[in-house]
Image (tube, rainbow, N blue to C red):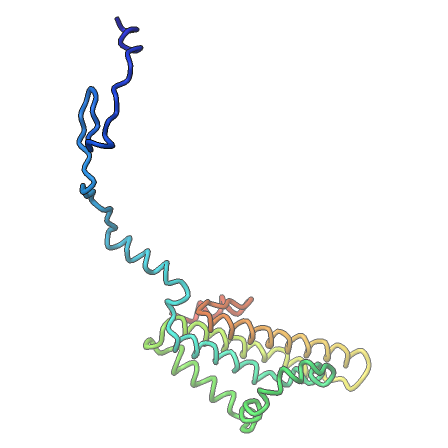
Length: 210
């Protein structure tokens, strides 16, 4: 009996013309039937929107302010490139558009110190600026403060020739290249709304930005 039930022919399906599925059970099919649409909770929807924004979540003004700040340590340490700039013409061509700004920065001896105070107290300590701006500004300040060490070393050890001069030239060129790479990396990353993190400098900047 069970075997005959299993071997019995399947019910015919005639829904193409009648719009219903006929057989042992009848299930009406209506093309106008509307099914409930899945809904996202407000929290999940907000998270989805924030993730979809990506780099666009940083305002354009914040990007520009953060990017410009990375010129400060580069201008302040441009003297470390005196050897490499005079020896290699590509560096001259790269730096030449910045000569007017560098000249204005170096025109007054206390410009660097005044800019340091302005950036730290007006920007970093100002909660009206976003944390993105304050972090990048503080990172540029820390990078500039680190220039004290090669400056002290060069003042205390200033050979005129021989192996000592070669060591000083290598040190100055290394500092200059690090400043140049930091400028290019920090400036371009900020323009794209990303957060640049410089070695050593980033952790110190994080501790200063509340």
